[in-house]
Picture 1 (cartoon, rainbow, N blue to C red):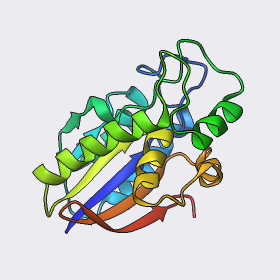
Picture 2: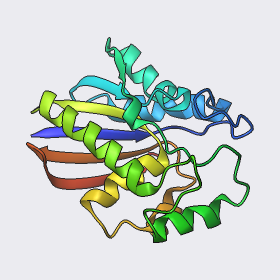
Picture 3: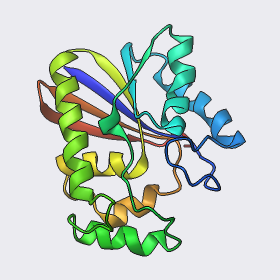
Length: 188
């Protein structure tokens, strides 16, 4: 069995609008210890991450404490929304969940985000068979992965996790078949 722990990043500084360099807030930096503590006894053998700073930094403490390198995989990055900051993000997100093809060019649709994340996940499942791994990721990207394996995960469920940072979703796989999904709220 392969266990994949997707880690949605801790709280990030939304005043920084550049997706690639947006850092964690002071709270986010403290909260990543929740991730380190949770993953400590899971027998993790490899750590992967989106190349975006907030995702990488969220899993970095765990990786350092366990002597593991972090391999960045570009396809695990968050969705490109648009070239401008969208103030009414809630309405935009709802439109995208209602239509997985909806996007503002040159942004991505949820269908495109899902396809690249699932492709990257399947590549890891092939190379990390029967291992326990961590993937540092983002709320929307992770939600599309969950939706791929459980299509009942919709806009309403996405809204429930919008403010939940960090958040962990544990997938268990037999080869490339998902056999279970567990949602871990580190604040409970």
